[in-house]
Amino acid sequence: MNNCTHRLEVCRSNVIAYYVCLHTKKPITLNQCVNCESIKIPAQISTPQPMPKLTTRIHSYVTALKEWKKAGKPIRSDEEVLRIFEVFCDKCKSHKKNKCLFCGCRVAINGYPITNKIKMATEHCPKELW
Image 1 (cartoon, rainbow, N blue to C red):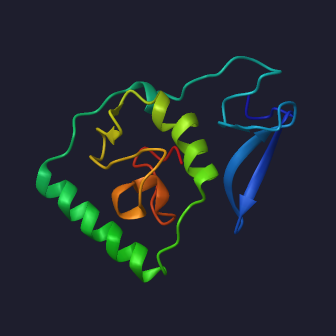
Image 2 (image 1 turned 90 degrees about the vertical axis):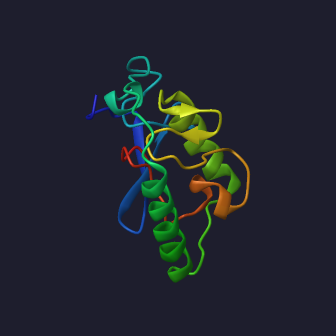
């Protein structure tokens, strides 16, 4: 599947940001192509994890805010937030009621960056899905 010829890599700063299906022109995951085969959900999505301790979550949040502020408070577009949420977070078994149970952060399709991990462009999924 990684050699699929129906997938276009969309790069930002020499890093693959996401993939686009050349048939539907919509964002897709690395393991998804409507022409080749059905969606394969990565193992990281299908394995739920216990939420970290409160002290760990607070430390991670403060660190994330510092890095975000240091980078100039970059934010993802609403379209990119929606794509990340629909393709990854919403399908993940560690996602419940707009919260990532893996890291404890709020992940949703809306909200301000300081209350929505996806909106902060400096943040990423702890499972390395986005």
